[in-house]
Length: 156
Image (cartoon, rainbow, N blue to C red; front, top):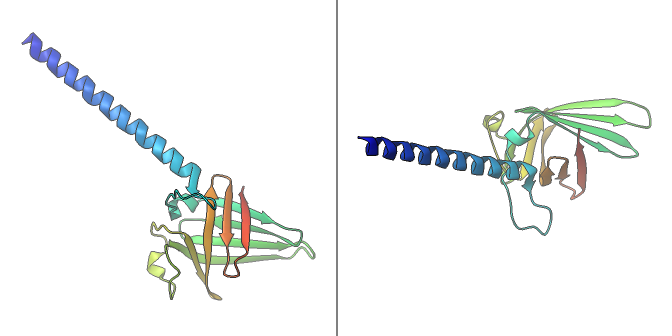
């Protein structure tokens, strides 16, 4: 009877150690994924980027001509442009989702739903626009527009 109790105790401890080890490995993997979402050029390793990663973040791109602030929610991208020459502010709201490819038309069913991909697909009354997410980490977001210009945003 005493031997059975010891065996059960040892087995229980082994299970707890296994769960703790698995959980710590999983957390470590998630942390690495959050630190480097997409590779910089020349790096082959790739991590998935999701709308969950972008949600509730704010990014700023500043030039001598204007300042641009991008605020992501789970379904809306609010883009604010402040022109330095006259101080005018322009604000645009887009529905957005992520995709592995550039779609032929905007799919509103994907808005607000967890999506992943290297293309940011956004839409408002002016039309549908797409940008390639070239790089994303905790401090920088690099977006390449259709004209191949890359804009480097800093996280606020």
